[in-house]
Length: 177
Image (cartoon, rainbow, N blue to C red; front, side):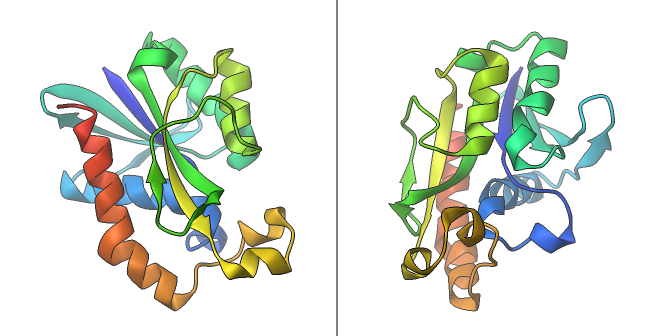
């Protein structure tokens, strides 16, 4: 079994924010498999179970809010006896990458508090990751913590839906080839 963790914040208020790109990508992946998410109280996460190329895979959206993502991830890895370094992939936003850029590398949190929470609770920085660039010119006009909680522009949402999310879904599926 594997787990793909999409980072974001729960609630309608945050649905279209830059910080929720991880949730957006998992929603698209679950849609591809025609599988709904359901809230699992014991993990404090929304979970969908899919099979990707023969591998049972949990799609996980922690409902702990971004900065405490590690709490839900720790419960899931413990319960399912997942090896964080081999069985877990985390998808999240990265303000240092240009909008739409996708990278699968990284060891540190790069200042991302959700990823740092996961590193701290799992006691390893060797977690697979897919970072989605959300940088835009607006970032220079506001502190990072405000920028990530702002909604994507209409044009950015169009680009997300048309190219970025499908590319990220493809990149995620490639890990199972």
